[in-house]
Image (cartoon, rainbow, N blue to C red; front, side):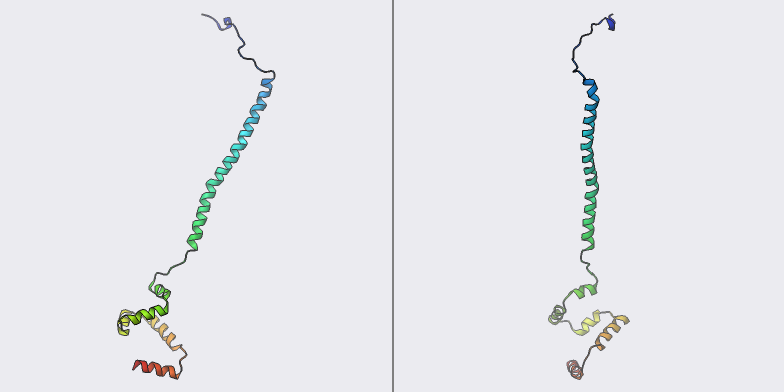
Length: 136
């Protein structure tokens, strides 16, 4: 068996002069250059990761809080109908005042509000006479 010392040494590669002295500087410059590029891209990706959801949440919040509030109660729906449209609808139907009043349930508070609005009207004598003529 041959020993390692018995094998002849051949110089297969030639190393340029001063190569190993310059090698640490070359490696250091490549590592620093690669690190700077990756750092910029990493910062960009991190900022996008947090900025995109934040922008989406802000946009949804703006649209959510600025949407028109709709009142779905009976009073809100009636308030959205123009008075002229409501009068023309009631004139075209065969409903009488008694039938309408049978469907409406008024409590004391509603009756007080209606009474105050009626008595608060500035009516003169001719208006009272017209109302009495309409009732008869």
